[in-house]
Amino acid sequence: MNQSVRKKQKRSRHGWGCAALFSIFSFASLIGVVALVPALSPSTGAQVADMIRGMAGPQVTADIESLSFWIQDNINQLAYQADGKRPGITLGQQSVAQPTAPVITPVSRPTLQPAPPPTQTANQPAAITQKPIFQRVVPTPLNTNAVTADPQIGWQAYGPAVNGQPVMAQALLNLDPTRPYAGVALVRIDLSMLQLHTEPGFLEPSHATNVTDAIPNLGTIPPADMSRLVAGFNGGFKAVNGKYGMVVDGTTLIPPYPGIATVAIYKDGHVQIGTWGQDLFPGDPNMIALRQNCPPILEAGQMDPRVYVDNTSLWGNTIGNQSITWRTGLGITQDRRYLIYAVGNATSVSTLAQALQNAGAYTAMQLDINKHYAHFVTYEASGSHLKAVQLLDQMESDPTLYLVAHSRDFFYLTTR
Image 1: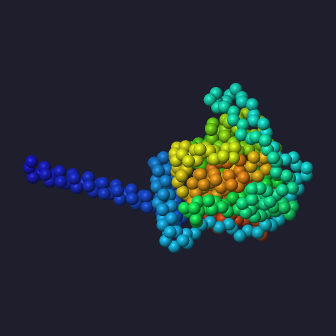
Image 2 (image 1 turned 45 degrees about the horizontal axis):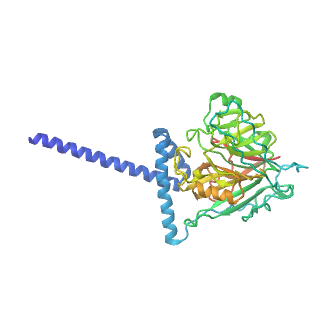
């Protein structure tokens, strides 16, 4: 072999070595950015994740985010072991106050009872079988409020009162002994006094152009509801993460998918959470809105076995259900009297489900994840305007949250 050939081979090996080092450095830098940026700035971290998702797709993004959260979780645990002072989450200091708008006390309102399972229709997939989950119910007495109802886990009155009575209660649970700084905050919502609504964002879930014509002012609470507004909270995943169904006022943004946890709202105001194709079915003329997100996490008061299955595709092509991050969820009691919102700062799906189960939820689902998308706010008067006040001190503060057009879907609560 002559000297010229040896030099070329040496240059080639050197070039491949430089390329390999550059690739390793680039990947390490990317992991560092994705791992550190969300901790320092959740909003910037969300933008970085969206950028990667647009270039590489949801699965690659899920893998990177899973590694990122694993790194962050280990840093948090090491920091706590070092000084025992790793901060957790704290409930905001908000007093119970009367709403500025007049409200009407419900009179002789019937107790919300579970409806019998609907009859299976011919257009349902043949593989789906009806599975009624609501058994005999002992309804919550109407003179019981959100604070005094069982089970008692330290509920405290929260948010505006209606005619002097609390309509929401808050509590904070610590369920993970390996992470003493990890908490799950819960809000119990009295649906005999409050009405749930859902609103699509002006960007998400992504939708056909005809939806904009059918639902004007996407991402905005209708003016008619502003005078009765009590609270608002985040919705579910982006359409790219699972393509979970959403219907608002009879307009379908994304068709509901069988086997997915679904919250449904009906004409008479009652709310049901169940599995599409097992507890909830298409063709019900009384169902006016729904939102799906991931498999159920509680069914018939028991945790769904899938909460222990760490599978990113099962959980919306995003991080696995055992990854530790901010998570939110929604449950409902068996008699459908109380809706329960949950948010945890260092939480797996199984811990989220356990918190909702402890709070009395009979069925439950996961909503959005990551700190930037975890929101629960109540509204109070600020001069001539309303101001949003976050549930947790650690939530991103935005006094105009849901009061101006929002890009992501959300839920809101009004007095009846």
